[in-house]
Length: 244
Image 1 (cartoon, helix red, strand yellow):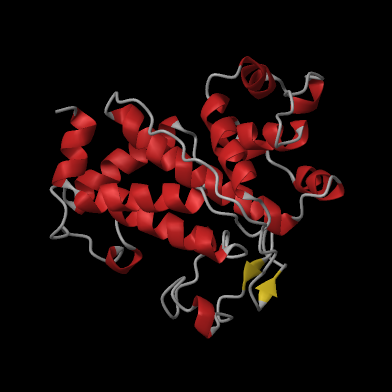
Image 2 (spheres, rainbow, N blue to C red):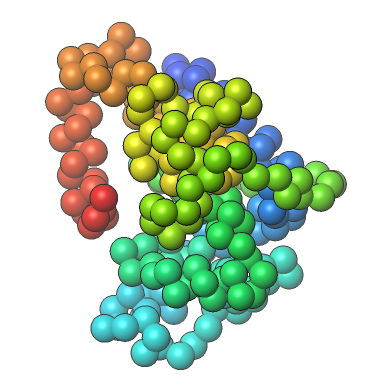
């Protein structure tokens, strides 16, 4: 049995969370249809080995590199460039880029949904890479149009994208974060609530559930204690130059 299959057999919660995300990926979203969502996922997977991204990242200014990513059947070159930058050079994402996306028809809420898809898939893929296993196959797209729905009580005064206000959860979205919590790292995706839910499910199995963040000892469901987990997380964050 492969390392990945062994891990998934020992941890059914991992298998269920991964399967749930791929089922979600195959369905139409808020602002992207299922073909576009899967195209976003596919572009995410090509970013790490992209020669153009390496040039842009090493340049003093990304604008010095005048070459553009090729568009795909479902995504414009501007969208592909943004997907790649989220993976390879996220520290230099600027509001002017978000405005440029909006000018091309990709609203800030559509950008939120895009970021959520990229982040969730990358988390699963990095798990597979850590075990030297092949990446899981992307699903087949399902028919349907984007819902174009947005949550209530959006606040546009923090960061580049609208977020649900800390105390603005309605009955439909009360599961997004615990009362009194609402950290920006969670709220950042709240313009697309289902992406918060997907991110939480993955974070719960790959790291810790939000409800256990205050447990500084050892969770009953983990073999590593919290100090060991944070040592690994801190080292990876340093290697990835995580500014957050």
